[in-house]
Structures are given as C-alpha cells and as structure tokens.
Amino acid sequence: REVFKTIGMAKVSESAHLARELGYMRDSDTIVMNRDLLIKTAKEEALNLVQAGYQSPAETSIKVLGKTALAAMKLMLHVMHEGKYVTDYDQVVATRVAYVLAGGDLSEEQEVPESYLLKLEREAILECLQDDRTLARREHMLKKGKPLRN
Image 1: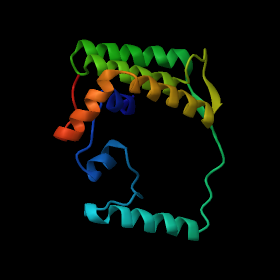
Image 2: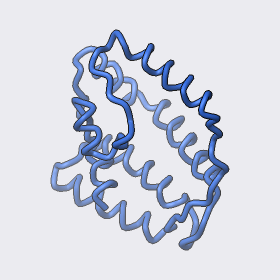
Image 3: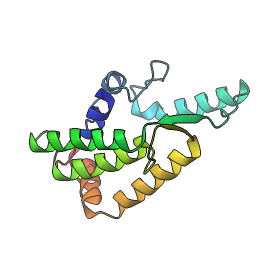
C-alpha cells in the first residue's frame, strides 16, 4: 500500500539517499557523488560483475492479485485525486501502474511469469509515451529539474 502510494503521488527523489529511503534503490547500490565519475564507476561495476561470473537470474513467477487488487488501487487513487494529493495525469499514470501490478485483467490472484508483467509494463509505457502530458513532464524536468504536476 505504501509503495503504491509513493508511486501514485509520483514522488521523485532529489538525492540518492532519498531514493534509498523511498525504496527506489537497494542498500547495496553504489552511490557516486561526483557526476564526472558516473560512467567510469558504472563501467568498473559492470566489468566486476562479468569477472565474478554473473549470470542473469532465471525467469521467476510473481504473485499478482488480479481485479480485486486493481479495484482497491483505483479506489485509493480516486480518494487521493479527490483530496488533491494527485493530479489528473498522476491518476492516469498511476492507474496504468496499478494495472501492471495487479497483473492486468486477471480475475483472481495467481502466479504469472515475469515476462508477462514486463509485457504489461511495456504496453503501459508506450501508452504514456503517446500522451502529450508525458512529453510535457519530461521537458519540464529537463529544463527546471523539478517534476511538472499536470
């Protein structure tokens, strides 16, 4: 519930440490304070993973809760919107996220392959990219360094 609330309110992080607190980063993720060292550090970490024999994990199944959970998330978003905690477009985007988290149109709780959720996520992202409000948000963030609340 708290994770979805964070997503629904489109909370952004102004620092890596805040990103950790919000759950966007793991404790094990490296923080690089000097922007000039970002690429170098990322390359070193990638090479270290290769040298350590890293293998991507096998696809796993993920439990989704189906339409009941989707309805609950939509209700929560409606209440947040009515209370002016989220904007019209926050609600649109968060509803798409809720659809993915619930597993789409599944009628009941079940395990689904990770690839199924990735497909839903890809579709949701493409829908957002076709909306002019997404472009406005991106441009505003790049120009002002702050999220646009449209």
